[in-house]
Image: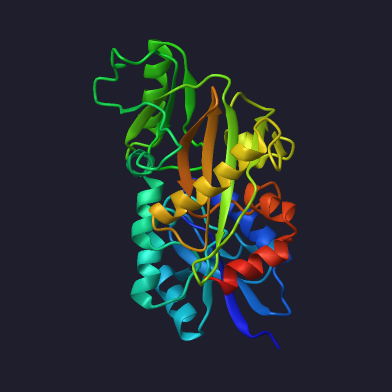
Length: 330
């Protein structure tokens, strides 16, 4: 008999709703159902919810949707563990749903509200990470109302929303006019977002590295993974989620073993500094032999093409074993 009840949270009101559904279906496919009694807890963009164990039925039967409050009450009363690994973006990576779950005293996977909120804030998290040794933060400025580039910056910039994931809304610009267009795009489509711009490090090597933390505080060291986008010049939404969108190499081939080991340790240091728990993933660039930190991800993607499962597989941890690790060490 299954000895633990798992509710895979998926969907939600974020801009990454569709990716969340993909991640959640993948989790359901590989989770060990001899150990766990598993259901989906599907959340609509309008914060209605429903329970189902049908992979093809997540977004159907809208008449049977519960209020979010009623859904959480059922999770609490039936002693479900909230598996948040399938959720992405706003409402979860910013710590909002964790705050609600803690209020209801529902156990869940991943980092707490304060650490999640901090990590989601690229600008402020980077200021903190800049205090670590052996890592640099790309020169960054917050975009004001006047949408002008400060004199000390060149027009070659990466413009992005400050608290969104999956590279949504990110643009590489090379001129003042492109900069203004990128800013206006974010303001129009994501009006609540603070906008930041970073120096564009052309030709940089993209590296990401996951972290697995045990309950006792010790870590499983994961190898970094090198990203070579095929679709676009950087690791954007399509490169992340379309099959064949990028070449991903574990361990990386464009840096030395020493640098790869340093990146693994840096990821652990960032995870610890930001107060994260159980697992995370960090994004880096290597430019002119220097390591640049971009951002931390508190709930890394778990689709068929996601990076953390690939890194775990490289050290002999299968997808099913990875899920076991996350649940047992939450």
